[in-house]
Image (cartoon, rainbow, N blue to C red):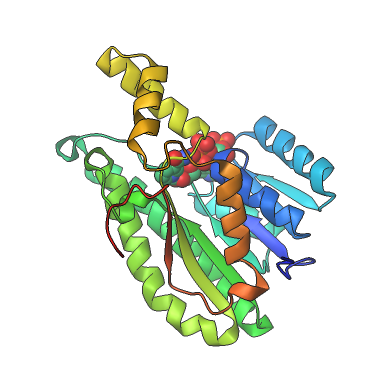
Length: 259
Ligand code: NAP
């Protein structure tokens, strides 16, 4: 299916690796000019070059921390009027809520709630004026099925989810949709780092931890970043203009509920 977005522009945040990178790659393959961001320059440049060579798409890179006003200003200066916005940033640290200070909470809310809201605020009116816009927020399956040690993520991302639910109904008549993509376990650096940390604290090997997690998933495996990127590209497609305010969970069926 031709997704009907060739020639559009996208700002894909936190995209030198993992799920953000996969979204940038899938959009570029559809002929979208992509602006990619990350804090680390080398990985970002390497990822951008790989996408250019694979797709021939225009790829611009912006080095900066997207959770800071300066990082967002740099990203928006490079891509001031995106047709497509994919928000993403690293997830908050795990732990026990008794150990988290107000500063920990503010950092999580800043990164995983206010950063996407600020980026939407800077771009959504232009999208509505032009009659096309697609916003996809990378959140987490933890929004639907909270994970106890990820309380900072559960809380901050749920705030974003509530905000998006309201806003998404007020933009869709101008062909601007806003949706959230909720990853379960995907094969990224983050997932392998989490397994390595669990291995250190349990005495098991990282391979044992990963094998147990794969076996516990109804699909018997982890998701691949390419699957995630392609779902993002579809949510950004011309055909997806009647889908807004939704939370698309990609977890291999791990969430056990009917709805
Ligand atoms: P990842 O493989 O660690 O990649 C994270 C990417 O984001 C890197 O390119 C990183 O580059 C960039 N980044 C991180 N913080 C940034 C910041 N403040 N400003 C700009 N760029 C930043 O992570 P991932 O697995 O793709 O996860 C992406 C998001 O999905 C995270 O919020 C994570 O919590 C969530 N998630 C992932 C899974 C999973 O299974 N993978 C499951 C649930 C939720 P730099 O470090 O160079 O900045």
